[in-house]
Image (cartoon, rainbow, N blue to C red; front, side, top):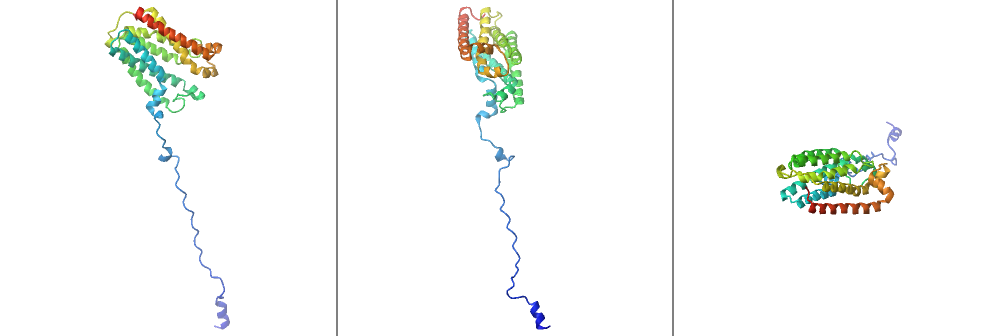
Length: 280
């Protein structure tokens, strides 16, 4: 081979040497993030006020339930009932009022959600309506034997009062007759106390007319007071209950004073009548 061909085949000394390029370094993996469905993402801090038992208590209108149960238990005590009968009255009325509170919030859950009513776990979506219905059904199965354990007539009077309250949650609420279920319900309470007794061994004498009338008027006063916080939403929804009609003429503040004085006067009248002529 000639020197010229060998020179052509020989690579020049200053020619750049091609070296294989290294593969590009992959970017570092992203930091692990909490997925929406991961346990850490869905875990919420513990809040006692949002636990199921507390939410059920809040939906039961606990203040009204406790005050009504204490009031009837105190009336039973003033009537000379033994302690075990006073306890029976307290438990029966407390369960019954809990039923009425749950039923009220179930009926009003759409309105409570629309108006963002405070203290309404069902309307706020914190409490499932199905859970409340199940609890209400269990309470109904409990209140019936509790009421009838005081006697058929006493238990019948209380269960009729409870039924009137349940019907009142659905009808007459937006009319001028909104007070009627409250008056009838409270007017039956003296019969429950008069006929009631341990294992049904109560009195056969019905309650006096005066005590029955005063108890019904007390229901009217309680209705006026209980309706005050919801007057604005009721007016927005076009409801024209008796408290709203009065408030539109007198003002809510004056209605509060009038209802408070009226209710206090009825309570005083019940105490005086109970001491003067008794329950029966």
